[in-house]
Image (cartoon, rainbow, N blue to C red):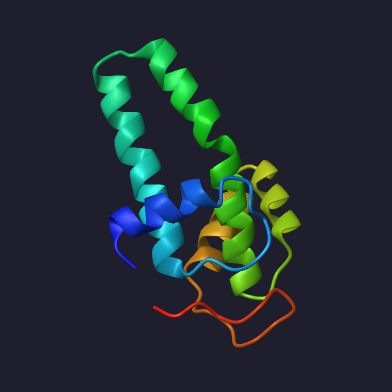
Length: 111
């Protein structure tokens, strides 16, 4: 999956918490969020930056849940991010794991 396809897919599945997301889909989405946030911060587009963050909150949660489904975990594990430092480290570790075979959340995506 390439950058454009991943971003389109995440916006298409805006609040789709079911299914699975491949590593490439997840990390291309993360790159998109980081790059746009940096650009909006650099041009000091405060209100536009806030609107962007609000508009991408649900797709970010959805792709995170689908990524966790892909490794056989519940999307609710995203709440571990509320634990300072350790929670983020654990989520990043899980996000880089390879896809598991078939699980309760559907077949593994093809890369």
